[in-house]
Amino acid sequence: MSINFSLPHESSFWSQDAASQLNGILRGLEKESLRITDEGCISQKRHPEAFGSALTHQFITTDYSEALLEFITPPTTDLSATLSCLDDVHRYVHQHLDGETLWGSSMPCVMGDEASIPLAQYGSSNSAQMKTVYRMGLGNRYGRFMQTIAGVHYNFSFPEALWESLWQASDQTMDLKDFKSHRYMGLIRNFRRHGWLIPLLFGASPALCESFLQGRPSHLDLLVPGTRYGRFATSLRMSDLGYQNNIQQCLKVSYNSLEEYVQGLDQAIRTEDPYYQQIGVLVDGEYRQLNANLLQIENEFYANIRPKRASQSGVRPTRALSEGGIEYIEVRSLDLNPFDPLGVTQDTLHFIDVLLLLCLIKPSPCITEREEAELEENLTRVVKRGRLPGVHLLMQNSEVELKHFAHELFEQLQEVAELLDKAYETSAFSSSVQQQHALIDQPEKSLSGQIVNLIEQRQDGFFPFAMELSKQHSEYFNQRPLDDEKHTKFEQEAKVSLQKQREIEQNDNKTFEEFLSDYFA
Image (cartoon, rainbow, N blue to C red; front, side, top):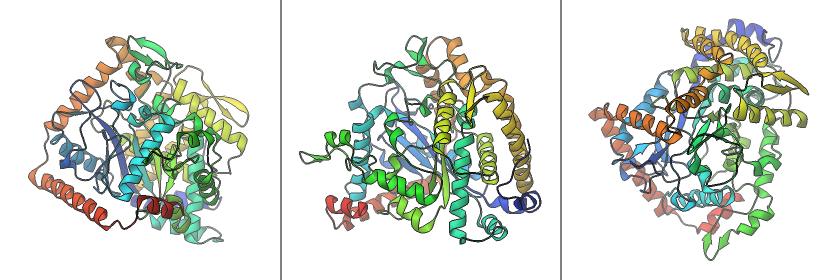
């Protein structure tokens, strides 16, 4: 099936001129990994000083738990530089882990009770306290176990030259800033229509250690003693066990325009919830959450893709988006690939590039309430039973076989891949699409299929399987220490980040209550 273009007159641009402007795409990664002990339990140690300040370090921070490291790569137009930088960060970190290991799977290691999951700490400044209290609130609202799940976030933006050319080719009824936001929101809507391809192809969390459930009932079956799984699941991380929390289903956040998206989040941040009121905010002199509203802050809204804009500390993300427009997008649906030491491969990133470009090119009508329900159901079906033979998805009130839907999409993806191949003078994008296309008829060869098959063959469970791979990754990095020059740069960055944290703490001139009041004003 050939591509219908977002605007009819754009077809000539994409076929003739686009390739020369696509090689300026900016990409960056945020990759999470749990620090674990030799016994495979979550680390109780503080964030190592050699990693610098989790508040201000450019490349190394923490996410929800103090033990959940997050590695950040700066945006770059170089196709190979993103993973090269991520590799350097891993090599530095492994030289300073002090006997610990990085867990190589999205679903966590052997878990104790919630008290064994340490909250991330960022110092004594107001901004640091806000980050920790926010995480305390997440734990009180959803439980701390969700704060041990790891993933990969992909940050992506098209080059300015491409936007200017598309804008010039449009009717120009809006300025360039608003045009970019308008088209980025269209991309996001299409990603929500087609983004189920990501967990289908790259989902790598079909099974988990039974300790994660803590005796709670679930829809999961017993794979081997101590391991629960979805027989045809692709990504339990993206299911209601992970980031797709059922409590947030009542939120009405629209992707039909940036204005509606911001308004929906803003309303949720300002609307109190009776259950959260019962938790309390400031109780006996200690904060249990930032507020008792449906969302404490915008980031609490879990979505598999987000519009983003870099902003100064203390400026709410929605305010930055309203004032400056969308700068880039963040794809959040990637599980860690447990077979790769970095947790993500270049082929995977190439495929996502192709999918995102297709989502920009295709028409993207507004999402109705009916379609919204279909999209949520489609994602649920894929993450819970995407490898089930004959599984169907919903499209315009009809059931369509997933395979048929996917094969049609891949015809379009192949066309787009050729555009990127031309832009970068490579065949890597087409190769990635072809490689993934083969999995549609062979789901057992997908990451989730391989994981289930290997655990069944081994008969020793998810934990021994993931622990063995984690140890192999650790050995891989330990055998490749950084050269002295790069190691010194990371040491210097750690020192600089600690100094920045001290300066922030020294310059605080408000109480925490005043800081929060100003932030939410």
